[in-house]
Image (cartoon, rainbow, N blue to C red; front, side, top):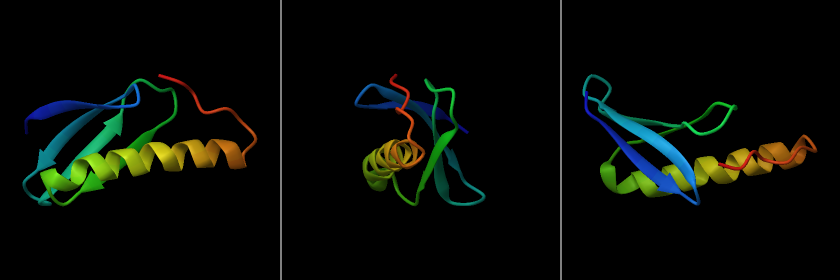
Length: 70
């Protein structure tokens, strides 16, 4: 399983393809919190990653905390 790195607004993610599940799995790696995402195609990765970062920011805001910056 090959692993690639993607960056969105400074948030660095590793992405790997799981052939058994036919899915791309990603994780933001430069945070203490666990932030993950999935995509069914390589073309969907940028949106999945960006949505995950925005969900993380919204979650932190709901909890009254500042989102950790990369």
